[in-house]
Length: 301
Image (cartoon, rainbow, N blue to C red; front, side, top):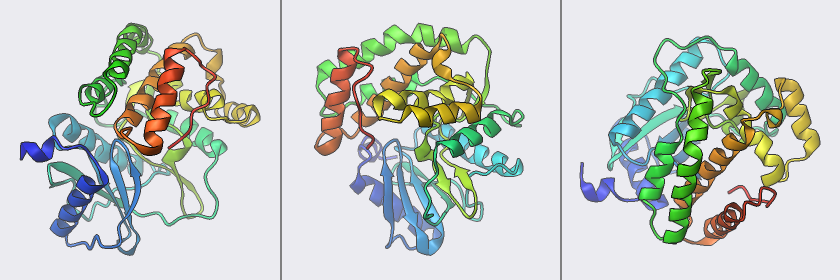
């Protein structure tokens, strides 16, 4: 693998090159690709091919293991009849292109009705009731990926990087004590409304890269945090709790998990915070974290 390619950040340009290369390898036309999301991965829709393409940041060993897990989870959920987006098993998976790993998923046409939090609550309850999968799943540990992001921070104020690194150090032991309490099971790992798709008559769960074994509360934190950070009405949160059957804010581990989740969201945003709206939002989040302002409104990007 070419070092210049492997060390290049994931941008629209670099992800687009990987998309085109991977599509050529499998005989698919990428000409009408639509970029849906650029974050930890680049996600493209190819409606004419009934494909969604997922471009990972690299093809390093850690990314390779994560991609293998995503594929295994997708196939296992299909075997369980769980409503989740499927891998395109008629295409070789994954494909190496431009120093990155690329996977291909079924395309779900847009629905006139967006999924809501009641859908998320129902899916999470069902997900948490699934049996143990027939393959090994790692224990929840968001710290390595946060520290990799910080180590690779480019164009970010070094003071912000130092603050976030110190914050990770301060919270890690309390987080590990919660995880080691052994009360939990299979979790989605990144459970928010953005990881739902309205399909043909049902709502589907997507994005399996963070699936792990850990406290079920971790999957409830994003919705609980959204009340303060993203203006979620408390009535909607109350309905989410009613359908799932639990209010995680009443639990003594909530503050620790919330802090770690917010560090994860902020280091994720940091990867693309060199200019424009991401830079403005990153600055806002950093100020609120430094001031320990838990009520400061954030904005989803």
